[in-house]
Length: 230
Image 1 (cartoon, helix red, strand yellow):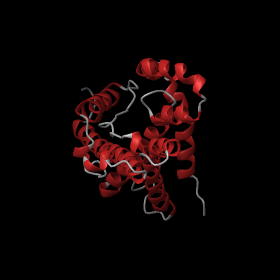
Image 2 (cartoon, rainbow, N blue to C red; image 1 turned 180 degrees about the horizontal axis):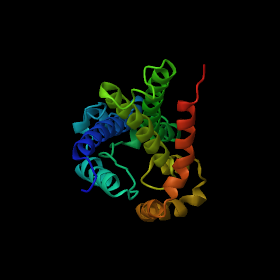
Image 3 (cartoon, helix red, strand yellow; image 1 turned 180 degrees about the vertical axis):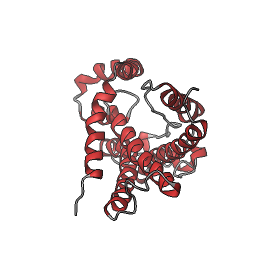
Image 4 (cartoon, helix red, strand yellow; image 1 turned 135 degrees about the horizontal axis):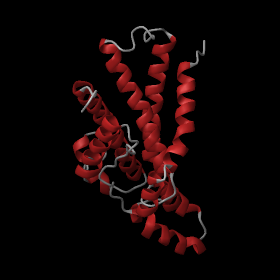
């Protein structure tokens, strides 16, 4: 592994996976909770309105792919998209009291949950920076390093998931919102996206489009963090 520090790799991977499990659990629980609020108890009855990661963990999308992506990126420097997904939340739209509104609200609930987590992480980290609890002199030592690693992952991983899920390609949440507002004449187009959505997403990731989209957002968040407000 050359100059790679195995201990540092494992510690950063563990922290990354802890935050990823939290992010995905909140995302899927958000869908389940919102669907329940609009009259559909399908996910609720299956115990999906919970932050228990066991209920939301997909062996491939939540564990295998994120771990491989993280290790490859860490050890080779090759930018592999650090994405993941959980077990899809089952919903029954026929039970919704207001289909159009519920479809939008249920779709964006997961994104909203990720943005709330990112905002909490940002608020805590910004406060610690502004009050000089974290400084250039101590950021790489002891508990401060662990806390900084956790908050950094909490912010940027949840931002990534929120932005990624906003893309209007099935099976992402953005496609469901888009389908709600498009006129019926666009249904063949949406069916086409439904068929080739995964392929389109893979191509976007391969061509680095996701990086182009997310980089300005990362830069803005970093700027807000390091620039003193008071």
